Length: 272
Image (tube, rainbow, N blue to C red; front, side):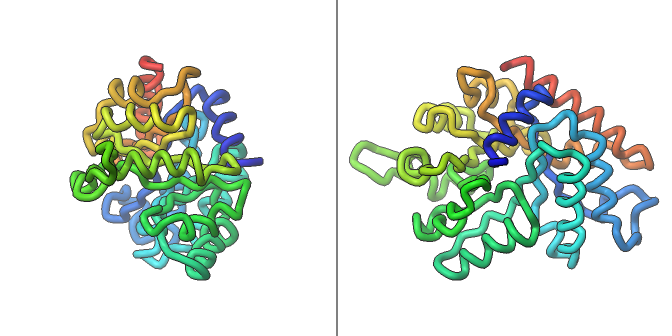
């Protein structure tokens, strides 16, 4: 099944635009998991099991695994989600960006080694750096457009044309009109910039948007949903990571995460 079909199914089945980011930091784990050899897998798997019926996607961030030599636990986690929660897509947040054979190897890593359903990609080296990802027509390719960090404005908001087109607008237009030939593309647009979310939605039509920045980063849910939803009330993967992952500190951490995930999903749905 294609990523976009999985995503549409999860939007409908779980009545959810919520994406839970899996950014495991062992320093924040409950005491009973610390120093366990598979602590990262166990922590993330319990979060996934507790929230799978409330989300439209999960988004593990590869750096949190690779920095602790836990790539095998990332493989196991994605396999676990696919087995236990079929239909919920897994987005590997890697933000890869390179050209030629190197990009091909990164695509093999994400889609063949880890079996991710989609991956985040940096498009700022141009189309040839994206083509190796697009070769996997059933996978999602989610390209950075207007990121949620303050420094994103250093480049992404700069005018690049006589019509005062911002660079992020050019990226949105190229992806939607030229690169999305197989219907597998999506864009990253941060919740901290609802005005730009609305502008991107205007440019790209119903293209899915991955929207980080609510929760710990302070993005406003109401403004995000109103700016980014499609006419069908979908089109968004609104990501929350730390606010859900670390909602509890004891052995009931997964139940605490579920409570916050439910509250977040329902808060999002109020504005759809």
